[in-house]
Length: 68
Image (cartoon, rainbow, N blue to C red; front, side, top):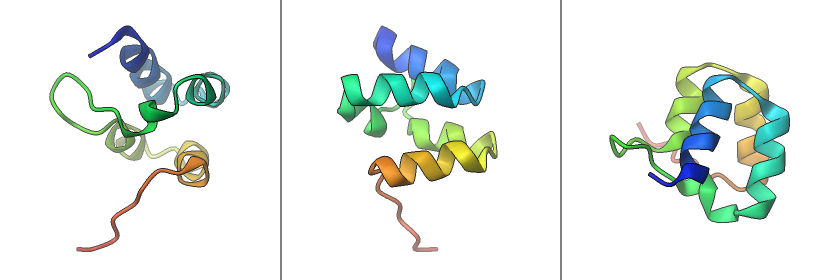
């Protein structure tokens, strides 16, 4: 996990939308990053249940698989 990925994970855990908004344009592939356990960082955001952060990630281009 890179330091940028770790910083994004921390921002997601803290629901720090301003930091997330600042980071993603600087490194767009971060949206598809995984943590040290191989979990997509988007799952971290979903687990934290912050709808505002999730909506931003989807609007930014997060690929969402709605198959169950």
